[in-house]
Length: 317
Image (cartoon, rainbow, N blue to C red):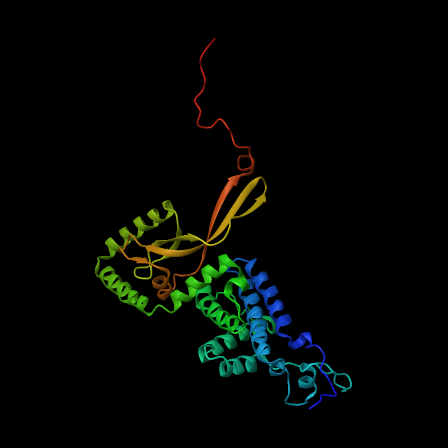
């Protein structure tokens, strides 16, 4: 059968490539920020909405067009030009996007749908109310699910997390995802409770002394200071760098910051030790942390001494 009316190019409002490029723009803005910054979470919520719309439009652009009240937006999504006066294309709400994706993509479960609704819901509160919706939200409570949902959406379009966020952040994302799904790590809760029971059985004076010793120890060691989940004393997290150092010059001083992903925990007060990101995630200690160092600018930028390591030549001629 011959088609007399031929559709034109898919409009940018529902073109999967255009939607993906916008999601990529937003995730690049996210990646430029510290992972514990509220703006990092805000940009991530924008990125996952556009990525979800791209994945749905990749199935068919018509799926993201509003079609309940008028067929003009649906007609427009198919590449045609509506004759409606003052026409403006409308898309379905993000809640409907996630609902349709959970019905279409086998790996995009109800859990992913609920996370998407929660994360973009916080975004709406942040932008449209006086509520600072992302303040105080630890990255460990949303980042693993964010990356897991993104991975599924990207896979449906033949792409990977590395394509989306780059190699370094993709490696971090895979570790966060693995930690979140490691059920065997939940055994660490029993270890924490056991150390807590032993700690509470100690005399109060002994607990005070051990806590004071732990505080001094923590300030003298390299790592990130946190409260022990068993005894509440100061303890240390250590890990591996996951970003390049960032230098900032101010008043003749260089401030260098670098993000780390924890993989070890130790408390000398009660003796609790935890190894592995998945086990740390169970007790809420898997958030990335920043290591900050300060340098004198003159010494930092001074040319390297080529004679370092050589002894003085005191021979007289």
